[in-house]
Length: 251
Ligand SMILES: Nc1ncnc2c1ncn2[C@@H]1O[C@H](COP(=O)(O)OP(=O)(O)OP(=O)(O)O)[C@@H](O)[C@H]1O
Image (cartoon, rainbow, N blue to C red; front, side, top):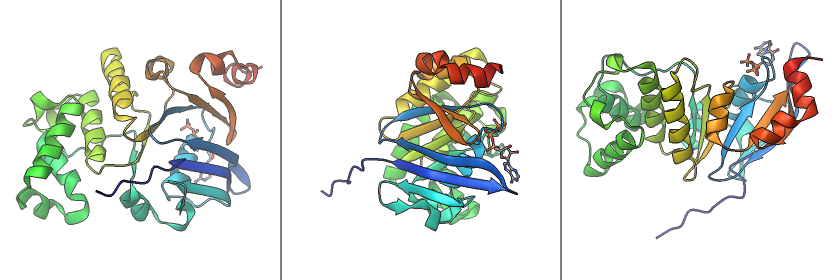
C-alpha cells in the first residue's frame, strides 16, 4: 500500500502583503500550520482575517509573499477551484445547505463534487460512498436527522451539516469562518467539540470572535492586527500580552 507523505507544514504563509488602493490589508503576514493542528485566529475588525482566508483559497493573489500547501504546492499559482480540489475546504459563515434536500441528500451532493445535482441524486452510491456518508453523519451528530430536510434543521445543525459536506471531500486543511456566530451556548460547546474531534486527521483553522468558544477549542491562538501576526500562544498567553490588550481595549 502506498503511504501518503506527511508534510512538515500543511500551510506555510511567508511575508504575504496584499494592498487595496495602497492600504495594506495584509502586511508581511507569516505563520505556519502543522499537519493535524487545530488553530484559532482572532483579531479586531479589519485585522485582515478574511483577506488571509481569501489569499489561502486563491480568491485573491498576494502582491508579495509565499503561500505553500503541503510544503511544495505554491498556492499563489492556482485558482480557487484547483485549490478546493487539492484538499483545502472553506466553510463560510453563512450555511449553504440546500433546504429542500434531506441531510443525507445534501451529503450525497457534496460527495459528488461538481458532477451536478441531477446526476448526483440519481446515481447509485457505492457501498464505500454510503459508508463514508454514514461516518460523516455520525461524526457531525446528525444521525437522527438523516432523513430530515435541510430547511427543518436549527442554525447550529445546518452549520454541522455544512462541515460534514466539506469533510466528505476529505480535505487536509479546513478553514472555518466564525462557526459559533448565532449559535446557542450549547451549540457553541458542541461545535468546539466537533472541531477538536475532526482536527488530528486534518488541520483546522478557525477564525472566531467568541472568546468562550476559543476557550473551549483549547488550542494555539494567533492574533492578527493590521494584517500582521501580533502574538501567538495559548489563549491565556495572548490574553496576558500587553500589545494584545492595547489593541483590543484601545489605549
Ligand atoms: N476588496 C477590498 N477593497 C478595499 N479594501 C478592502 C477590501 N477587502 C478588505 N479591505 C480592507 O482590508 C482590511 C482588512 O479586511 P478584512 O475583511 O480582511 O478584515 P477582517 O479581520 O476579516 O475583519 P472582520 O473581523 O470585520 O471580518 C479592512 O480595512 C478592509 O476594509
